[in-house]
Figure 1 (spheres, rainbow, N blue to C red):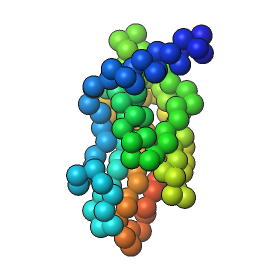
Figure 2 (cartoon, one colour):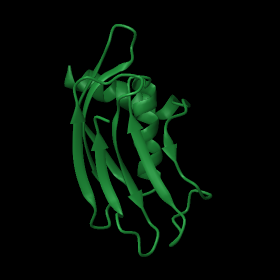
Figure 3 (spheres, rainbow, N blue to C red):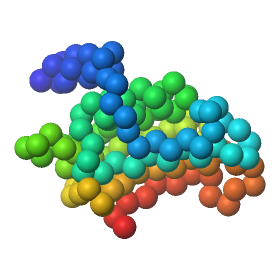
Figure 4 (cartoon, one colour):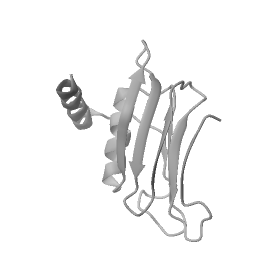
Length: 125
């Protein structure tokens, strides 16, 4: 089963084109005063979205590991447990077992110089 999931994940990495919720206010390159990456996992997301998020973040040098994911009958994300490593000294994890369209969990990395909160995880509004 684990091998099947791995093969499916690799296949989805290759063909995934779904949009997702990563907000990058500049051209995608970290700049000292403007770039903030924020990822929000909620009940709107599907498997393809999670694959795309992981791939796009890896291209920015950020490692995202899904330790557990579950979907409802409609294929929407129901629960998640993740670990993120920005590979610059900032890392963390969060989980949520009851995601909805409005209730999510996620993380941010703010590259602005002098920011009071350069990294954090969040959930359960």
